[in-house]
Image (cartoon, rainbow, N blue to C red; front, side, top):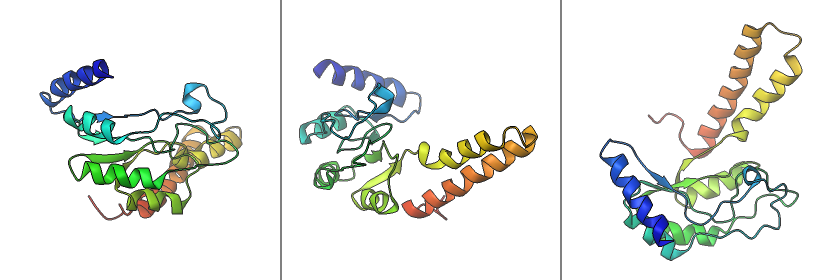
Length: 174
């Protein structure tokens, strides 16, 4: 851990000297992108109070904690988040850095709003805004010309993006 923190501090200094923001992910947000097919019973390392302090001390700008969220699919049980842990993280961060949410696949509007209420101010989404786009491309690829296919696909992704912005309270803010 000490070596990781030292490298992070060095990276933060390098990036900040160039006007680049930095984000760290203490704990481990396990999941499908790690080759794990079903994460329902996965007991990944969750972010601790000590990790919050250690990573903030490196000078990072954004903290992406692990509180039950995972990259990729959640499996049959769906997301099981520790909102008490998120509250502890929010309290420890106390405005010194921004809290980021990774692993939002299968999040309902209620879960997303609960995360925002818990102090998350940056949300990384992927599948949540691309599902309709990918289904459209797959179903319509042989029926539409390329330009129409892409325009309609982008429109579907835009609608989901706008919905996510509404859910997160970001609409109308620049």
